Length: 71
Image 1 (cartoon, rainbow, N blue to C red):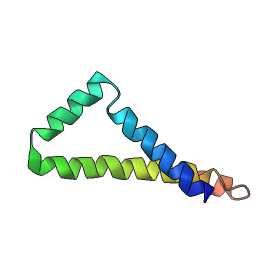
Image 2 (image 1 turned 180 degrees about the vertical axis):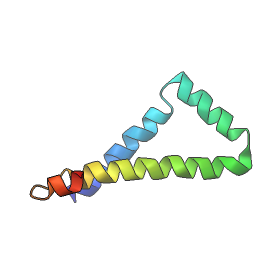
Image 3 (image 1 turned 120 degrees about the vertical axis):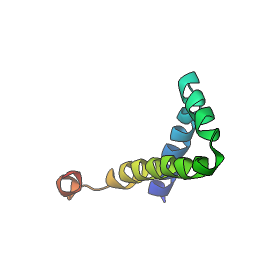
Image 4 (image 1 turned 90 degrees about the horizontal axis):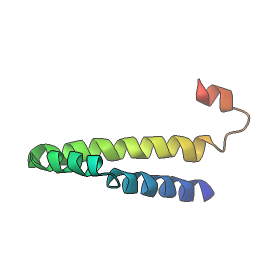
């Protein structure tokens, strides 16, 4: 259960970071200029968020196989 909480906390933090800086806000505005591509590009961004968060949330709990997970 703790790993799932970590997963959601990491994703929430990354989402907040997406809109935190002026540069990131401008990037999202430029993505919105082409509506048919916006959904696909945002999907890629969120998939990246999930992959990163998953590796940290569940990979951090590995003790014996940490070297194999890292390689």
